[in-house]
Length: 277
Image 1 (cartoon, rainbow, N blue to C red):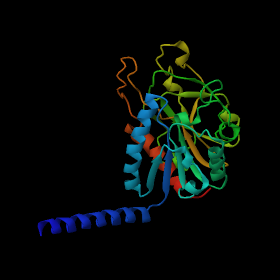
Image 2 (image 1 turned 60 degrees about the vertical axis):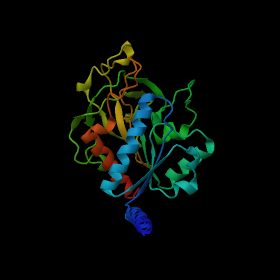
Image 3 (image 1 turned 45 degrees about the horizontal axis):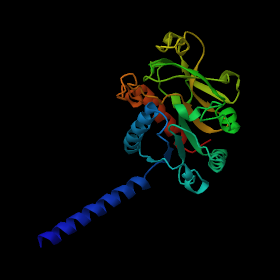
Image 4 (image 1 turned 180 degrees about the horizontal axis):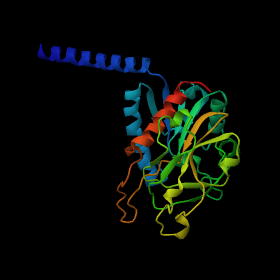
């Protein structure tokens, strides 16, 4: 009798769990799918794991649905049709069919947010610039040119204070430690690009080296922008600080430990989740 009662209680618990999950999905404002690789750099791997902990928490708080996958074969029209927002957490698709499916998804009004290494391209590397639509038209940035090192915080300036992604952000704020990228193309000269955040001049010198060129002393560096022809946002953030020197690979910083930076991301999700171009 006790065993029967235990079975009944367990079955009831399972039903309640299923109903709870169904209710959560049925009331979700929008659905997000995040693609990742998590193989190329310990700092990027750290960020992916952190993101896959943080986004589900935000999904419960803001009533959206979050899924993630490292299977890039899912980047096809049928699979993408289930989701309102696509995230690239650390890389880009490499197969022609996957790239075509993503471009069609965006051309038809889909939404996207890319982080840090998702925009990386450099000829004569494992990530050649062999996707002109993505790097030159969609992102507008072209190839990677250089970076700061070590990962350090920067003072970021909000360039566009009327965009939904920057709603109620302060004029400047301190970012989480990050490796910052410089790009081949000057985004200020691209009429389709709206720069939302850039590195403020008070950040300089930015980086600690040890190589001289890894420390920036001047210049203009956009770090968050959107393309007015697409529902998209790129953020240069996405590289945690790691203890490489002592070979411990200990995580020394986290991207989502920054409330203001988190507000930027939540604003962006809620803006793109509305489904309006």
